Image 1 (cartoon, protein in one colour):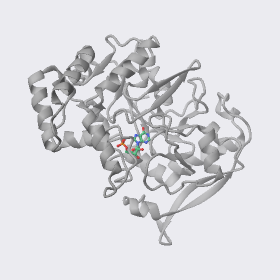
Image 2 (tube, rainbow, N blue to C red):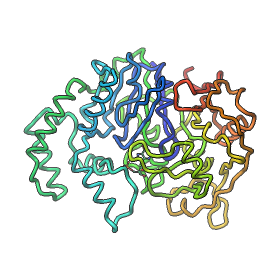
Image 3 (cartoon, rainbow, N blue to C red):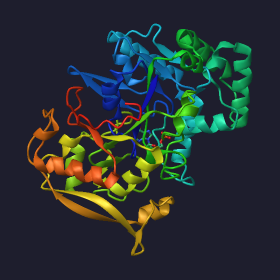
Image 4 (spheres, helix red, strand yellow):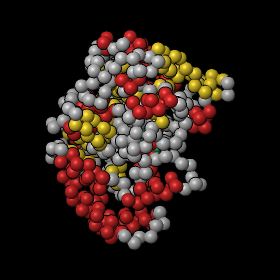
Length: 422
Ligand code: IMP
């Protein structure tokens, strides 16, 4: 048995799904362990575009099994609609899709609470996706949440929902219809119910692939708090969110070749100029879930080294390198100054992160379109140099480089795979 994780190592949207899709070819199970439909993954296979919010991208391989682990928060109505859309494209779910009964449910109430908090001028605006993710995780911790497995015990479900509304001091006018809708959703999803730890106990020879959502800088503990999501996006979140208790053998960190952020919060290398706009347009930097334009900036090696450390990365995948073609000069942030002093550690305070002054090195750009390049040595010299520089700054091998949305647009740097068990 082997286990691999693909984790976003910045503020999300690192094009992880593309890397998951490529590595899924070697996996038996593809597992989501955190987050919910705040995530948006887009994959192109043979020109056809697929967008995922909850279902692991591995579902595109007919023989692979996909799992939503106990750490995922599930909007059952959204999940049903995602399944329906994928089924319409010919994807089969029978005996290959599993949902853990411990997974918490995102209810319409959570969306409402999320929207309300975001609109409240007396609260810090986070710029959430308004999918109810934060309120759902908060309810889980407050022990008032509803779990997927609760859908199969009507009396208990009524009791739990009544309890939940009472907890939030919200009038309970429509509990009856909500319960009916949930029970209906539960019937549709019942074939997928499985305590997934029993799958792991029986998986001697199988390869597990953990698919991260969001990114390390959005981790609720190690990210730019409070401008974070509400789950554990880092490698440390895998065991608790999947029930697979062993350390992951191979941890692949995914970074974009530049940085982006959507929502509020500090972003030291943000570009507010024409270059930022160029990157946004060329990289199609608009959220797959909300359509919001993403903030764009230079690669931040200070933040990137921090997340490489937080996740104990074995190797790195660098995505969207093709987007940087055509820029005369590229910058990489190599250090921060705060109040004139060099900062040795990545600031844990968002106030300080907002105040740092990034210090850059400059590298020459390249003009060529690299989107059809399949071998590293075919890249323009300056593009190779850009990759070597990031590699050196992170102290990690860059084993995969993505130069386009299609599966085929991936450069594998042979002989560099750092899998501990390889
Ligand atoms: P929430 O996860 O909807 O609560 O949003 C919290 C923060 O995480 C906001 O800044 C969102 O923009 C950000 N966020 C959540 N999901 C994603 C994602 O999939 N990609 C990028 N940012 C995300």
